[in-house]
Amino acid sequence: MNETFIHLNETHSTNSYLRELIMREKEQPEGTVVITDYQTAGRGQKGNSWESERGKNLTFSILLHPNHIPPGKQFILSQLISIAIVGVLKKYDRHFTIKWPNDIYWKEKK
Image (cartoon, rainbow, N blue to C red):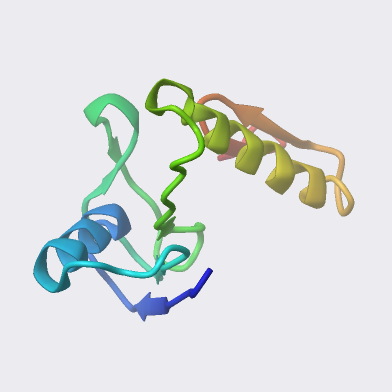
């Protein structure tokens, strides 16, 4: 995997930025990461908006091409990533949980 790391101080949405980058420049390498300190128009699941405080959240998107997983089963990736993140964080504090589909909570705070 040939990764590219793009850091932005601010953007409307890392997911939208990545999509626009692909539309503008065509192919991007799998593993491309777009991370920002602040999203002005973050999006959650099912069209919900997602608000965050500047510099206080993990706001990033990763480009993956999971061709080996059928489209109807690709939510498995989100599940695996959430479980892996909580597994690592629980080494430092046991109060981490997951609110599906992909929200990580610490002591009931997102």
